[in-house]
Image (cartoon, rainbow, N blue to C red; front, side):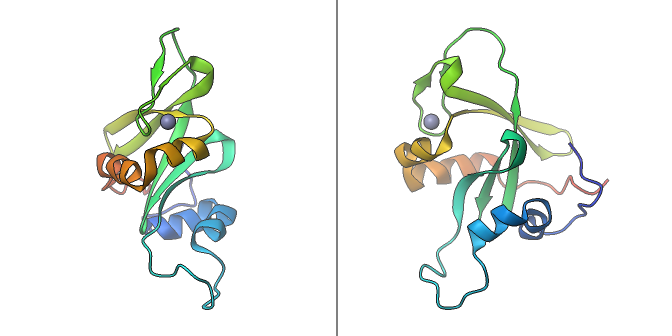
Length: 137
Ligand SMILES: [Zn+2]
């Protein structure tokens, strides 16, 4: 899905435009007294319409859920558990103008990220980033 308001901004700008609530949640409101400043942001965050935003530093990838097909068990690409159809979702990630990746992730994502840990998230991010700017049309 393309957003006519989104231009080739940085991922962080994009996140702020598309998902202002998520942006606030991830990067926090301007508050210099907050702890944890300086640590690179890395995580998957649920956003609107069942999508997920993978954020790594100032990079952002949007995971769009797909309708599941077939009856095979799913293998989570983050925590590597085998999941039934009802326990996981298939996502599409556009990483370049003509390149799309498909990922299977547990639902909900919180416990999955807990199992995968920071290392697992880093490996996932390495498979996705860098993303070419495909938002400008
Ligand atoms: Zn998982």
